[in-house]
Image 1: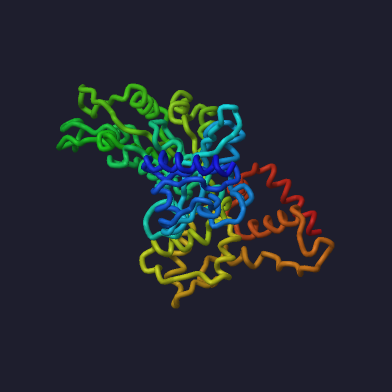
Image 2 (image 1 turned 45 degrees about the vertical axis):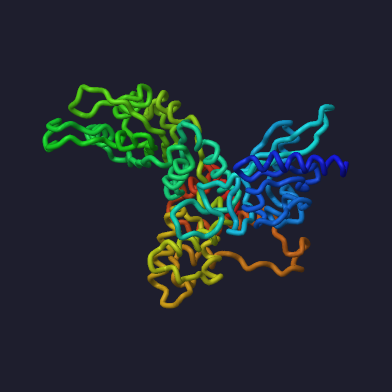
Length: 447
């Protein structure tokens, strides 16, 4: 087996060096048999990595990915007997980066598994470390699921529909899709659909000719023309009135349009991305959104998680936002203040977190943001949190049951949430009936 691996390493090394991107060959024990020059430069700091395990080089880990909370592409490829791709966070000399890893199993003539080849590609749409640059930042599993979908849909012309609450970063995700596509050198044109009247919608989207209406003193190209060769991003597409939905559907079906006041059709050339905070399925059922338009734009839905579902990212987001807020680059959060933010429900999501940090930056006289610089709702959350039990308390060594942990969490969010019960249920991702039942159980437990 050793001789077989040695000869394989020689052949694989020659083949892999002909590839542009990082690539490695691995045996079934995760050991690198061969690595091309690109892989050594990007992940191995130029050193020889042959004989090392893939997880020690890319993760600095002593156990395979599946034992460290990540999916192992080799195991997935073996189970499927076909190429499989996952998104990981890999260590590089430049810091941690998001990397798409595609593993392909290679079989002997007798059908037995011989070795694997992995192709690696750095994901340009986000960063795993704090950054002063605009763009997506995160490491949590919920964030990684979004980034994986971005990476898969970006190279295609498929329409992506971004679904998420207000403040979850839908425009940033749309820009990430555009930046990872082959249209990245062409314009990214966002359109805010909320509040557009019929005449304004047509004029903004399609443009108008001189004299088309009162005040049209010169011809003006529309946003569809501005997005030529690039990406058109329709934000809050669920707010478009039904009469205007017809015009949008015609644009998407015919890929042509006419400027207001013109009879000459023009060809549209754009990649479409839509976003909404509304439930389009419910709007279709209520007759408020056209079913044919819904199916046209919902080819590849991407649910964006609220901040409460990616709490592990809060410290990273705080560091990033402080770097991006003018005048706040020198500030840091006290641990007590960070705990307040970790326990807060964030109904306004990342946008609310930025607002909280901007306010705190103005209130802090020194370099440290403390709990007193945060809004009352954040501090009340921390105050409502029960003190941890001693390690030898109770029959479970101080551990609480899941039911107790849920009750404690409900007490905190009920005390800190600024909206009504309906809004709270929506923020928690449950029905009002479920929330009412849980609150009844909370009241019973307090008696």
